Amino acid sequence: MELGDLPQEILIDIFLLLPLKSIGKCRCLAKSYRQQLSTPNFIKSHLSRNTHQENLLLVTPFDTIYSIIPTIKDDTIWKKLPGLDLCNWTEVVGSCDGLILMVLEEFEKFLVNPITLQMVKVPKSPLALKRKKSFRMHGFGYDSSSDDYKVVTLSYYDTDNEHRSNDTFVDVYSVKRGVWKRVERSPYDHSVLQLSPWDYFNRELSQQAMFSKTLSPGAFVNGAIHWLARSRKPGSPSVIAAFNLTEEVFDEIPVPGGVDVQMFVFNKLVVLGGCLCMTHTRENGSIDVWTMKEYGLKESWAKFNIHAANDVWDIFKPLYLIRDEEVVLVTEVETLVVYNRREGTLRDMVVGEGRVVDDGCTFVGSLVSPAHIAPESKTRSLVEVESKTPSLVKVKTEKV
Amino acid sequence: MARKNRNPVGKNVDPEAQKKKTRTLTLKSSDGQEFSISESAAVLSIAIENMVEDDCAGGVIPLPLVDGGTLARVITYLNKHAEDGASDEEKRKFDEEFVSGMEMGVLFDVVLAANYLDIRGLLREVRRRIADRMKNKSVEWVRKTFHIESDFTPEEEEQMKKEFAWAWEGVDSDVDD
Image (cartoon, rainbow over all chains, first blue to last red; front, side):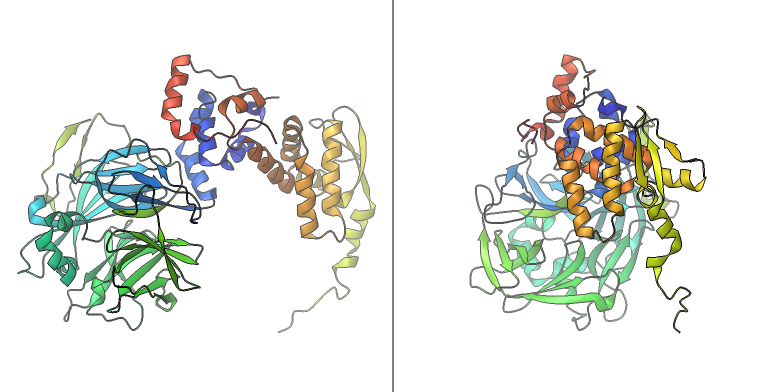
Protein backbone atom coordinates (compact mmCIF):
# COMPACT_ATOMS: atom_id res chain seq x y z
CA MET A 1 0.00 0.00 0.00
CA GLU A 2 1.43 3.34 -0.98
CA LEU A 3 0.26 6.76 -0.08
CA GLY A 4 0.02 7.35 -3.79
CA ASP A 5 -2.70 4.69 -3.91
CA LEU A 6 -5.01 6.74 -1.78
CA PRO A 7 -7.59 8.61 -3.81
CA GLN A 8 -6.36 12.02 -4.74
CA GLU A 9 -9.00 13.90 -2.79
CA ILE A 10 -7.98 12.12 0.42
CA LEU A 11 -4.33 12.70 -0.32
CA ILE A 12 -4.83 16.39 -0.91
CA ASP A 13 -6.97 16.69 2.21
CA ILE A 14 -4.15 15.12 4.24
CA PHE A 15 -1.54 17.45 2.75
CA LEU A 16 -3.77 20.42 3.47
CA LEU A 17 -3.46 19.61 7.18
CA LEU A 18 0.33 19.78 7.11
CA PRO A 19 2.37 22.78 8.25
CA LEU A 20 4.18 24.87 5.61
CA LYS A 21 7.59 23.27 6.07
CA SER A 22 6.20 19.78 5.76
CA ILE A 23 4.56 20.71 2.50
CA GLY A 24 7.85 22.14 1.31
CA LYS A 25 9.53 18.84 2.09
CA CYS A 26 6.76 16.79 0.49
CA ARG A 27 7.34 18.72 -2.71
CA CYS A 28 10.72 16.98 -2.76
CA LEU A 29 9.25 13.47 -2.57
CA ALA A 30 8.79 12.95 -6.28
CA LYS A 31 7.84 14.91 -9.36
CA SER A 32 4.11 14.28 -9.11
CA TYR A 33 4.07 15.52 -5.53
CA ARG A 34 6.02 18.58 -6.44
CA GLN A 35 3.45 19.39 -9.08
CA GLN A 36 0.37 18.69 -6.98
CA LEU A 37 1.59 20.63 -3.97
CA SER A 38 2.50 23.69 -6.03
CA THR A 39 -0.74 24.37 -7.84
CA PRO A 40 -2.38 27.73 -7.10
CA ASN A 41 -5.50 25.84 -6.04
CA PHE A 42 -3.64 23.82 -3.45
CA ILE A 43 -1.84 26.90 -2.15
CA LYS A 44 -5.10 28.79 -1.88
CA SER A 45 -6.90 25.95 -0.10
CA HIS A 46 -4.03 25.64 2.33
CA LEU A 47 -4.14 29.37 3.00
CA SER A 48 -7.85 29.24 3.71
CA ARG A 49 -7.56 26.19 5.95
CA ASN A 50 -4.53 27.24 7.87
CA THR A 51 -5.24 28.63 11.29
CA HIS A 52 -4.08 32.10 10.52
CA GLN A 53 -1.27 32.54 12.96
CA GLU A 54 0.22 35.98 12.58
CA ASN A 55 3.98 36.34 12.53
CA LEU A 56 6.01 39.48 12.86
CA LEU A 57 8.64 40.61 10.41
CA LEU A 58 11.12 43.30 11.36
CA VAL A 59 13.86 45.18 9.62
CA THR A 60 16.76 46.24 11.81
CA PRO A 61 19.65 48.61 11.10
CA PHE A 62 21.92 45.63 10.72
CA ASP A 63 20.00 45.19 7.52
CA THR A 64 18.89 41.83 8.66
CA ILE A 65 15.37 40.60 8.66
CA TYR A 66 13.94 38.71 11.54
CA SER A 67 10.78 36.78 11.42
CA ILE A 68 8.85 35.13 14.10
CA ILE A 69 6.91 32.58 15.28
CA PRO A 70 3.57 32.32 17.05
CA THR A 71 3.27 34.09 20.34
CA ILE A 72 5.61 36.63 21.72
CA LYS A 73 7.00 35.92 25.12
CA ASP A 74 10.25 37.04 26.61
CA ASP A 75 11.93 34.03 25.08
CA THR A 76 10.83 34.88 21.58
CA ILE A 77 12.86 33.10 18.95
CA TRP A 78 14.01 35.51 16.30
CA LYS A 79 15.31 34.15 13.08
CA LYS A 80 17.36 35.54 10.30
CA LEU A 81 15.86 35.28 6.90
CA PRO A 82 18.67 34.03 4.72
CA GLY A 83 19.17 35.79 1.43
CA LEU A 84 17.29 38.90 2.45
CA ASP A 85 19.85 40.20 4.90
CA LEU A 86 22.08 42.03 2.48
CA CYS A 87 19.38 44.41 1.41
CA ASN A 88 18.94 47.91 2.76
CA TRP A 89 15.24 47.84 3.31
CA THR A 90 13.81 51.23 4.12
CA GLU A 91 10.14 50.49 4.27
CA VAL A 92 7.85 47.56 4.92
CA VAL A 93 4.66 48.62 3.19
CA GLY A 94 2.36 45.84 4.29
CA SER A 95 1.40 42.23 3.84
CA CYS A 96 -1.39 40.16 2.41
CA ASP A 97 -1.76 36.36 2.35
CA GLY A 98 1.85 35.91 3.41
CA LEU A 99 3.35 38.22 0.79
CA ILE A 100 5.07 41.37 1.99
CA LEU A 101 5.71 44.47 -0.10
CA MET A 102 9.07 45.99 0.86
CA VAL A 103 10.99 48.96 -0.46
CA LEU A 104 14.78 49.19 -0.82
CA GLU A 105 16.91 52.22 -0.21
CA GLU A 106 17.08 52.70 -3.96
CA PHE A 107 13.28 52.82 -4.12
CA GLU A 108 13.05 49.41 -5.65
CA LYS A 109 10.01 47.47 -4.57
CA PHE A 110 10.01 43.75 -3.86
CA LEU A 111 7.39 41.19 -3.04
CA VAL A 112 8.73 38.77 -0.48
CA ASN A 113 7.37 35.55 0.94
CA PRO A 114 9.36 35.27 4.20
CA ILE A 115 8.46 31.59 4.60
CA THR A 116 9.51 30.29 1.19
CA LEU A 117 12.11 33.08 0.86
CA GLN A 118 10.93 33.84 -2.64
CA MET A 119 11.53 37.41 -3.63
CA VAL A 120 10.39 39.07 -6.82
CA LYS A 121 11.12 42.60 -7.91
CA VAL A 122 8.18 44.74 -8.82
CA PRO A 123 9.19 46.39 -12.09
CA LYS A 124 9.69 50.10 -11.91
CA SER A 125 6.66 51.93 -13.10
CA PRO A 126 7.24 53.85 -16.32
CA LEU A 127 4.53 56.16 -15.01
CA ALA A 128 6.36 57.08 -11.82
CA LEU A 129 6.90 60.77 -11.14
CA LYS A 130 10.46 62.04 -10.86
CA ARG A 131 11.61 61.09 -7.40
CA LYS A 132 13.17 64.28 -6.25
CA LYS A 133 10.19 66.31 -7.27
CA SER A 134 7.46 64.20 -5.87
CA PHE A 135 6.11 62.27 -2.92
CA ARG A 136 4.66 58.83 -2.98
CA MET A 137 3.09 56.23 -0.77
CA HIS A 138 2.35 52.62 -1.43
CA GLY A 139 -0.18 50.01 -0.52
CA PHE A 140 -0.50 46.29 -1.19
CA GLY A 141 -3.50 43.98 -1.19
CA TYR A 142 -5.57 41.32 -2.86
CA ASP A 143 -8.46 41.67 -5.27
CA SER A 144 -10.64 38.58 -5.00
CA SER A 145 -12.71 39.37 -8.09
CA SER A 146 -9.71 39.11 -10.39
CA ASP A 147 -7.78 36.79 -8.06
CA ASP A 148 -4.83 39.15 -8.23
CA TYR A 149 -2.47 40.90 -5.87
CA LYS A 150 -2.07 44.60 -6.50
CA VAL A 151 0.46 47.25 -5.60
CA VAL A 152 -0.99 50.76 -5.45
CA THR A 153 1.18 53.86 -5.56
CA LEU A 154 -0.19 57.30 -4.82
CA SER A 155 2.08 60.12 -5.94
CA TYR A 156 1.97 63.86 -6.31
CA TYR A 157 4.38 66.60 -7.25
CA ASP A 158 6.13 68.50 -4.53
CA THR A 159 5.04 72.06 -5.12
CA ASP A 160 6.53 73.50 -1.95
CA ASN A 161 3.12 73.50 -0.43
CA GLU A 162 1.95 76.44 -2.45
CA HIS A 163 -0.69 74.43 -4.11
CA ARG A 164 -2.63 72.65 -1.49
CA SER A 165 -4.88 71.08 -4.07
CA ASN A 166 -2.17 68.95 -5.53
CA ASP A 167 -3.46 66.23 -7.81
CA THR A 168 -2.64 62.74 -6.65
CA PHE A 169 -1.95 60.14 -9.31
CA VAL A 170 -3.02 56.59 -8.66
CA ASP A 171 -0.96 53.83 -10.24
CA VAL A 172 -1.94 50.19 -9.91
CA TYR A 173 0.35 47.23 -10.57
CA SER A 174 -1.20 43.85 -11.25
CA VAL A 175 1.08 41.12 -9.93
CA LYS A 176 -0.63 38.47 -12.01
CA ARG A 177 -0.31 40.34 -15.28
CA GLY A 178 2.88 42.24 -14.55
CA VAL A 179 1.41 45.51 -15.72
CA TRP A 180 1.26 49.03 -14.32
CA LYS A 181 -1.62 51.27 -15.16
CA ARG A 182 -2.76 54.70 -14.13
CA VAL A 183 -6.34 54.95 -13.00
CA GLU A 184 -8.39 58.06 -12.26
CA ARG A 185 -6.79 60.60 -10.01
CA SER A 186 -7.70 60.51 -6.37
CA PRO A 187 -10.56 62.84 -5.46
CA TYR A 188 -8.79 63.52 -2.15
CA ASP A 189 -5.92 65.68 -1.08
CA HIS A 190 -3.20 63.29 0.04
CA SER A 191 -0.48 65.90 0.25
CA VAL A 192 -1.48 66.93 3.74
CA LEU A 193 0.41 64.05 5.25
CA GLN A 194 3.79 65.63 4.98
CA LEU A 195 2.48 68.90 6.37
CA SER A 196 2.20 67.64 9.89
CA PRO A 197 4.45 69.75 12.11
CA TRP A 198 6.65 66.81 12.95
CA ASP A 199 7.16 65.82 9.33
CA TYR A 200 7.70 69.37 8.20
CA PHE A 201 10.40 69.80 10.79
CA ASN A 202 11.92 66.51 9.79
CA ARG A 203 12.07 67.51 6.21
CA GLU A 204 14.80 70.02 6.87
CA LEU A 205 16.77 67.46 8.76
CA SER A 206 16.49 64.45 6.62
CA GLN A 207 15.48 64.44 3.04
CA GLN A 208 16.01 60.72 3.04
CA ALA A 209 13.49 60.22 5.78
CA MET A 210 11.04 62.37 3.90
CA PHE A 211 11.30 60.33 0.79
CA SER A 212 11.16 56.95 2.33
CA LYS A 213 9.60 56.70 5.71
CA THR A 214 7.38 59.54 6.71
CA LEU A 215 4.71 58.94 4.12
CA SER A 216 2.27 56.44 5.49
CA PRO A 217 1.80 53.11 3.80
CA GLY A 218 -1.76 52.11 3.04
CA ALA A 219 -3.58 49.75 5.39
CA PHE A 220 -5.15 46.78 3.58
CA VAL A 221 -8.39 45.44 5.03
CA ASN A 222 -11.48 43.99 3.41
CA GLY A 223 -10.43 44.32 -0.21
CA ALA A 224 -9.43 47.98 0.06
CA ILE A 225 -6.30 49.95 0.88
CA HIS A 226 -6.86 52.79 3.32
CA TRP A 227 -5.15 56.13 3.74
CA LEU A 228 -5.93 59.20 5.74
CA ALA A 229 -6.52 62.20 3.49
CA ARG A 230 -8.44 65.45 3.25
CA SER A 231 -11.66 65.89 1.39
CA ARG A 232 -11.79 68.66 -1.19
CA LYS A 233 -15.11 69.77 0.22
CA PRO A 234 -15.32 73.15 1.99
CA GLY A 235 -13.40 73.07 5.24
CA SER A 236 -11.24 70.20 4.01
CA PRO A 237 -12.41 67.66 6.56
CA SER A 238 -10.22 64.62 7.20
CA VAL A 239 -11.42 61.34 5.76
CA ILE A 240 -10.47 57.69 5.76
CA ALA A 241 -10.12 57.08 2.03
CA ALA A 242 -10.52 53.47 0.95
CA PHE A 243 -9.17 52.45 -2.45
CA ASN A 244 -11.26 49.49 -3.55
CA LEU A 245 -8.99 47.04 -5.37
CA THR A 246 -11.80 45.58 -7.47
CA GLU A 247 -13.40 48.79 -8.66
CA GLU A 248 -10.12 50.71 -8.48
CA VAL A 249 -11.88 53.77 -7.13
CA PHE A 250 -11.83 55.60 -3.81
CA ASP A 251 -14.60 55.57 -1.30
CA GLU A 252 -14.89 56.87 2.25
CA ILE A 253 -15.53 54.74 5.27
CA PRO A 254 -17.20 56.00 8.44
CA VAL A 255 -14.92 57.50 11.06
CA PRO A 256 -15.22 57.06 14.82
CA GLY A 257 -17.68 59.41 16.50
CA GLY A 258 -16.19 62.36 18.31
CA VAL A 259 -12.86 62.60 16.48
CA ASP A 260 -11.57 65.99 15.42
CA VAL A 261 -12.31 66.09 11.67
CA GLN A 262 -9.82 68.87 11.13
CA MET A 263 -6.99 67.04 12.79
CA PHE A 264 -7.39 63.31 12.44
CA VAL A 265 -5.63 63.34 9.11
CA PHE A 266 -2.46 63.47 11.22
CA ASN A 267 -3.32 60.21 12.95
CA LYS A 268 -2.07 56.85 11.73
CA LEU A 269 -3.86 53.94 10.16
CA VAL A 270 -2.66 50.44 10.95
CA VAL A 271 -4.05 46.91 10.81
CA LEU A 272 -4.19 45.05 14.11
CA GLY A 273 -5.59 41.56 14.41
CA GLY A 274 -7.15 41.89 10.98
CA CYS A 275 -9.04 45.10 11.87
CA LEU A 276 -8.49 48.62 10.63
CA CYS A 277 -7.19 50.79 13.47
CA MET A 278 -6.58 54.51 13.78
CA THR A 279 -4.15 55.79 16.36
CA HIS A 280 -3.94 59.25 17.81
CA THR A 281 -1.12 60.49 19.98
CA ARG A 282 -2.27 62.79 22.74
CA GLU A 283 -0.23 65.69 24.04
CA ASN A 284 0.70 63.76 27.16
CA GLY A 285 2.23 61.01 25.03
CA SER A 286 -0.46 58.42 25.57
CA ILE A 287 -2.17 57.09 22.50
CA ASP A 288 -5.74 56.26 21.65
CA VAL A 289 -6.30 53.25 19.45
CA TRP A 290 -9.67 53.03 17.67
CA THR A 291 -10.45 49.63 16.23
CA MET A 292 -13.15 49.11 13.63
CA LYS A 293 -14.38 45.73 14.86
CA GLU A 294 -16.83 45.30 12.02
CA TYR A 295 -15.67 46.69 8.75
CA GLY A 296 -17.67 49.64 7.47
CA LEU A 297 -19.79 49.92 10.59
CA LYS A 298 -19.48 53.28 12.31
CA GLU A 299 -20.88 51.98 15.59
CA SER A 300 -18.27 49.24 15.73
CA TRP A 301 -15.32 51.60 16.30
CA ALA A 302 -14.03 50.88 19.81
CA LYS A 303 -11.31 52.80 21.58
CA PHE A 304 -8.65 51.84 24.06
CA ASN A 305 -5.86 53.96 25.46
CA ILE A 306 -2.20 53.08 25.79
CA HIS A 307 -0.75 55.09 28.59
CA ALA A 308 2.91 55.11 27.77
CA ALA A 309 3.92 58.58 28.83
CA ASN A 310 7.60 58.92 29.62
CA ASP A 311 10.38 61.43 29.09
CA VAL A 312 12.42 59.38 26.68
CA TRP A 313 10.20 58.57 23.74
CA ASP A 314 6.76 58.68 22.23
CA ILE A 315 5.03 55.82 20.53
CA PHE A 316 5.27 55.80 16.76
CA LYS A 317 2.70 53.13 15.97
CA PRO A 318 1.32 49.81 17.13
CA LEU A 319 2.56 46.83 15.17
CA TYR A 320 1.22 43.57 16.48
CA LEU A 321 -1.50 42.30 18.74
CA ILE A 322 -0.83 39.33 21.01
CA ARG A 323 -4.05 37.54 21.90
CA ASP A 324 -5.96 40.79 22.34
CA GLU A 325 -3.99 41.20 25.54
CA GLU A 326 -0.73 42.80 24.60
CA VAL A 327 0.31 45.25 21.90
CA VAL A 328 3.77 45.44 20.37
CA LEU A 329 4.62 49.07 19.65
CA VAL A 330 7.36 50.85 17.74
CA THR A 331 8.61 53.97 19.47
CA GLU A 332 9.77 57.20 17.85
CA VAL A 333 13.34 56.18 18.75
CA GLU A 334 12.88 52.94 16.83
CA THR A 335 12.77 50.49 19.68
CA LEU A 336 10.09 47.94 20.41
CA VAL A 337 8.00 47.89 23.56
CA VAL A 338 5.18 45.62 24.63
CA TYR A 339 2.14 47.10 26.33
CA ASN A 340 -0.01 44.87 28.50
CA ARG A 341 -3.59 46.09 28.26
CA ARG A 342 -4.84 44.42 31.39
CA GLU A 343 -2.05 45.52 33.68
CA GLY A 344 -1.30 48.79 31.92
CA THR A 345 2.41 47.99 31.98
CA LEU A 346 5.17 48.42 29.42
CA ARG A 347 8.24 46.34 28.87
CA ASP A 348 11.11 46.44 26.38
CA MET A 349 11.35 43.89 23.68
CA VAL A 350 14.75 42.77 22.56
CA VAL A 351 15.03 42.01 18.90
CA GLY A 352 17.79 39.69 17.84
CA GLU A 353 21.17 41.27 18.43
CA GLY A 354 20.00 44.74 19.22
CA ARG A 355 17.03 46.76 20.22
CA VAL A 356 16.58 49.01 17.25
CA VAL A 357 14.15 48.35 14.43
CA ASP A 358 13.56 50.31 11.26
CA ASP A 359 10.20 48.98 10.29
CA GLY A 360 8.05 45.90 10.43
CA CYS A 361 4.71 44.33 9.76
CA THR A 362 2.67 41.27 10.57
CA PHE A 363 2.10 38.46 8.13
CA VAL A 364 0.50 35.04 8.00
CA GLY A 365 2.61 32.14 6.86
CA SER A 366 1.65 30.94 3.42
CA LEU A 367 2.98 29.24 0.31
CA VAL A 368 1.71 31.99 -1.97
CA SER A 369 4.30 32.76 -4.59
CA PRO A 370 5.20 36.36 -5.37
CA ALA A 371 5.93 35.27 -8.94
CA HIS A 372 2.46 35.15 -10.35
CA ILE A 373 3.18 36.74 -13.65
CA ALA A 374 1.72 34.63 -16.41
CA PRO A 375 4.42 33.80 -18.94
CA GLU A 376 1.95 33.75 -21.79
CA SER A 377 3.68 36.26 -24.04
CA LYS A 378 7.34 36.70 -24.78
CA THR A 379 7.07 40.42 -24.99
CA ARG A 380 4.75 42.29 -22.80
CA SER A 381 3.93 45.86 -22.25
CA LEU A 382 4.76 47.06 -18.79
CA VAL A 383 2.02 49.63 -18.97
CA GLU A 384 -1.58 49.30 -19.77
CA VAL A 385 -3.13 52.43 -21.20
CA GLU A 386 -6.42 53.38 -19.67
CA SER A 387 -8.70 54.79 -22.29
CA LYS A 388 -9.68 57.61 -19.98
CA THR A 389 -6.21 59.12 -19.73
CA PRO A 390 -4.35 58.17 -22.86
CA SER A 391 -2.29 61.31 -23.10
CA LEU A 392 -0.66 60.74 -19.76
CA VAL A 393 0.98 57.51 -20.67
CA LYS A 394 3.91 56.62 -22.80
CA VAL A 395 4.01 52.95 -23.48
CA LYS A 396 7.30 51.21 -23.09
CA THR A 397 7.74 47.69 -24.27
CA GLU A 398 10.37 45.51 -22.80
CA LYS A 399 11.74 42.10 -23.58
CA VAL A 400 11.11 39.52 -20.96
CA MET B 1 -47.04 32.50 17.67
CA ALA B 2 -46.21 29.19 19.25
CA ARG B 3 -45.35 26.44 16.82
CA LYS B 4 -47.81 23.61 16.82
CA ASN B 5 -46.16 20.45 18.03
CA ARG B 6 -47.49 17.54 16.05
CA ASN B 7 -45.66 15.03 18.15
CA PRO B 8 -46.06 16.10 21.76
CA VAL B 9 -44.44 12.97 23.11
CA GLY B 10 -41.12 13.97 21.62
CA LYS B 11 -38.69 12.34 19.28
CA ASN B 12 -37.46 9.79 21.78
CA VAL B 13 -40.24 7.45 20.89
CA ASP B 14 -40.15 8.10 17.18
CA PRO B 15 -41.21 4.66 15.99
CA GLU B 16 -38.91 4.79 12.97
CA ALA B 17 -35.86 5.47 15.16
CA GLN B 18 -36.87 2.70 17.51
CA LYS B 19 -37.15 0.29 14.64
CA LYS B 20 -33.70 1.22 13.41
CA LYS B 21 -32.25 0.56 16.80
CA THR B 22 -33.67 -2.91 17.11
CA ARG B 23 -33.34 -3.88 13.47
CA THR B 24 -29.96 -5.38 12.65
CA LEU B 25 -28.12 -5.54 9.39
CA THR B 26 -25.39 -7.89 8.33
CA LEU B 27 -22.26 -6.47 6.73
CA LYS B 28 -20.08 -8.81 4.75
CA SER B 29 -16.38 -8.04 4.28
CA SER B 30 -14.24 -8.74 1.22
CA ASP B 31 -12.86 -11.88 2.87
CA GLY B 32 -16.31 -13.23 3.64
CA GLN B 33 -16.63 -12.35 7.32
CA GLU B 34 -20.10 -11.30 8.46
CA PHE B 35 -20.82 -8.70 11.12
CA SER B 36 -24.10 -7.80 12.76
CA ILE B 37 -24.77 -4.16 13.41
CA SER B 38 -27.83 -2.18 14.43
CA GLU B 39 -29.31 -0.21 11.58
CA SER B 40 -29.05 3.02 13.54
CA ALA B 41 -25.26 2.55 13.78
CA ALA B 42 -24.85 1.33 10.21
CA VAL B 43 -26.59 4.32 8.65
CA LEU B 44 -23.99 6.69 10.09
CA SER B 45 -22.27 5.57 6.92
CA ILE B 46 -23.94 7.53 4.14
CA ALA B 47 -23.10 4.78 1.66
CA ILE B 48 -24.83 2.10 3.77
CA GLU B 49 -27.76 4.41 4.42
CA ASN B 50 -28.24 4.80 0.67
CA MET B 51 -28.12 1.05 0.19
CA VAL B 52 -30.71 0.52 2.92
CA GLU B 53 -32.94 3.24 1.48
CA ASP B 54 -32.70 1.79 -2.00
CA ASP B 55 -33.58 -1.53 -0.39
CA CYS B 56 -30.83 -3.24 -2.28
CA ALA B 57 -29.62 -4.71 0.99
CA GLY B 58 -31.62 -7.89 0.99
CA GLY B 59 -30.51 -8.77 4.50
CA VAL B 60 -26.75 -8.95 3.87
CA ILE B 61 -24.79 -5.96 2.65
CA PRO B 62 -21.63 -6.95 0.79
CA LEU B 63 -18.69 -4.58 1.16
CA PRO B 64 -16.17 -5.95 -1.35
CA LEU B 65 -13.65 -3.17 -0.77
CA VAL B 66 -13.30 -3.58 3.00
CA ASP B 67 -11.50 -6.49 4.66
CA GLY B 68 -12.71 -8.07 7.88
CA GLY B 69 -10.12 -6.53 10.20
CA THR B 70 -10.83 -3.04 8.92
CA LEU B 71 -14.58 -3.56 8.99
CA ALA B 72 -14.41 -4.66 12.62
CA ARG B 73 -12.65 -1.40 13.46
CA VAL B 74 -15.15 0.66 11.52
CA ILE B 75 -18.04 -1.07 13.30
CA THR B 76 -16.49 -0.28 16.69
CA TYR B 77 -16.44 3.37 15.64
CA LEU B 78 -20.02 3.33 14.35
CA ASN B 79 -21.36 1.63 17.48
CA LYS B 80 -19.75 4.23 19.71
CA HIS B 81 -21.20 7.08 17.70
CA ALA B 82 -24.69 5.53 17.67
CA GLU B 83 -24.58 4.86 21.42
CA ASP B 84 -27.43 6.40 23.39
CA GLY B 85 -26.35 9.06 25.80
CA ALA B 86 -22.72 9.25 24.67
CA SER B 87 -21.79 12.90 25.10
CA ASP B 88 -19.88 14.85 22.46
CA GLU B 89 -16.94 15.04 24.81
CA GLU B 90 -17.01 11.27 25.30
CA LYS B 91 -17.11 10.72 21.54
CA ARG B 92 -14.26 13.14 21.00
CA LYS B 93 -12.14 11.27 23.52
CA PHE B 94 -13.07 7.96 21.96
CA ASP B 95 -12.09 9.25 18.50
CA GLU B 96 -8.72 10.34 19.73
CA GLU B 97 -7.94 7.02 21.40
CA PHE B 98 -9.43 5.10 18.50
CA VAL B 99 -6.86 6.38 16.00
CA SER B 100 -3.92 6.99 18.34
CA GLY B 101 -2.76 3.38 18.51
CA MET B 102 -3.13 2.60 14.83
CA GLU B 103 -0.14 1.86 12.69
CA MET B 104 0.23 3.68 9.44
CA GLY B 105 -0.90 0.71 7.35
CA VAL B 106 -4.05 0.39 9.44
CA LEU B 107 -4.69 4.12 9.13
CA PHE B 108 -4.54 3.78 5.36
CA ASP B 109 -7.01 0.89 5.40
CA VAL B 110 -9.37 2.79 7.67
CA VAL B 111 -9.14 6.03 5.69
CA LEU B 112 -9.98 4.13 2.51
CA ALA B 113 -12.89 2.37 4.19
CA ALA B 114 -14.17 5.64 5.68
CA ASN B 115 -13.95 7.26 2.26
CA TYR B 116 -15.72 4.35 0.53
CA LEU B 117 -18.44 4.11 3.18
CA ASP B 118 -18.72 7.90 3.41
CA ILE B 119 -18.27 8.25 7.16
CA ARG B 120 -17.20 11.89 7.38
CA GLY B 121 -16.28 12.06 11.07
CA LEU B 122 -14.04 9.02 10.85
CA LEU B 123 -12.48 10.25 7.62
CA ARG B 124 -11.65 13.59 9.26
CA GLU B 125 -10.17 11.90 12.31
CA VAL B 126 -7.93 9.49 10.40
CA ARG B 127 -6.78 12.17 7.97
CA ARG B 128 -5.73 14.31 10.89
CA ARG B 129 -3.90 11.42 12.49
CA ILE B 130 -1.97 10.64 9.31
CA ALA B 131 -1.07 14.32 8.87
CA ASP B 132 0.08 14.52 12.52
CA ARG B 133 2.44 11.62 11.91
CA MET B 134 3.86 13.30 8.82
CA LYS B 135 4.45 16.70 10.39
CA ASN B 136 8.06 17.84 10.41
CA LYS B 137 9.38 14.47 9.33
CA SER B 138 12.28 14.22 6.91
CA VAL B 139 11.75 13.55 3.24
CA GLU B 140 13.43 10.18 3.69
CA TRP B 141 11.03 9.24 6.46
CA VAL B 142 8.00 10.11 4.38
CA ARG B 143 9.36 8.22 1.39
CA LYS B 144 10.04 5.15 3.48
CA THR B 145 6.75 5.22 5.35
CA PHE B 146 4.65 5.75 2.28
CA HIS B 147 6.77 3.65 -0.06
CA ILE B 148 7.38 6.54 -2.39
CA GLU B 149 10.23 6.31 -4.86
CA SER B 150 11.94 9.46 -5.92
CA ASP B 151 12.05 10.04 -9.64
CA PHE B 152 14.47 12.93 -9.36
CA THR B 153 18.02 12.58 -10.65
CA PRO B 154 20.75 13.16 -8.02
CA GLU B 155 21.36 16.58 -9.59
CA GLU B 156 17.69 17.46 -9.40
CA GLU B 157 17.64 16.21 -5.84
CA GLU B 158 20.46 18.61 -4.93
CA GLN B 159 18.67 21.40 -6.73
CA MET B 160 15.48 20.67 -4.76
CA LYS B 161 17.38 20.77 -1.50
CA LYS B 162 18.58 24.23 -2.38
CA GLU B 163 15.25 25.45 -3.61
CA PHE B 164 13.42 24.16 -0.57
CA ALA B 165 16.14 24.83 1.98
CA TRP B 166 13.58 26.78 4.02
CA ALA B 167 11.61 23.58 4.46
CA TRP B 168 14.53 21.33 5.33
CA GLU B 169 15.72 23.07 8.45
CA GLY B 170 14.44 22.02 11.83
CA VAL B 171 13.41 18.47 10.92
CA ASP B 172 12.15 16.42 13.85
CA SER B 173 13.73 13.16 14.81
CA ASP B 174 12.36 10.43 12.62
CA VAL B 175 11.28 8.34 15.57
CA ASP B 176 7.59 7.78 14.97
CA ASP B 177 5.92 8.57 18.24
